[in-house]
Amino acid sequence: MTEKTENRQVTRKQRNGTVVSVSGAKSVVVRVETRRRHAMYSKVVRIHRKFHAHDENSRAKVGDKVQIEECRPYSKMKRWRVTAIEAVETVA
Image (cartoon, rainbow, N blue to C red; front, side, top):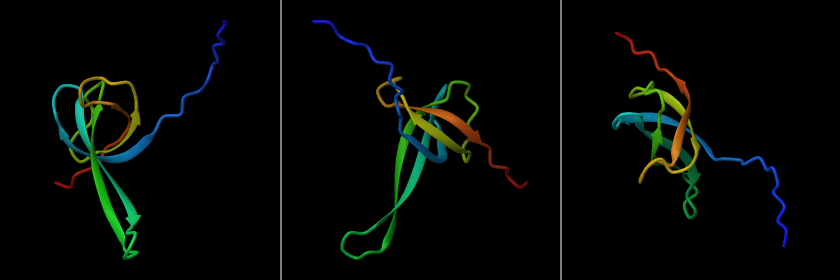
């Protein structure tokens, strides 16, 4: 049997969140918050999840808004990579 190889563009999941901690070299923890309607009470509820992401250049700091993208596993916990960083200015 002959197999065809198709050039398919892979669509990867993307999320926006806030850096909660810098957990080592090239690693960050990102908190992603979503809003959903409660099934029974119809109230809008905020739900959050934390994702461990790979930051190649170690540029993200705690409090920065980042965009992460699904990728191959970098380690046991890291399955996401940082694609964009929007630095948040702190008032001193």
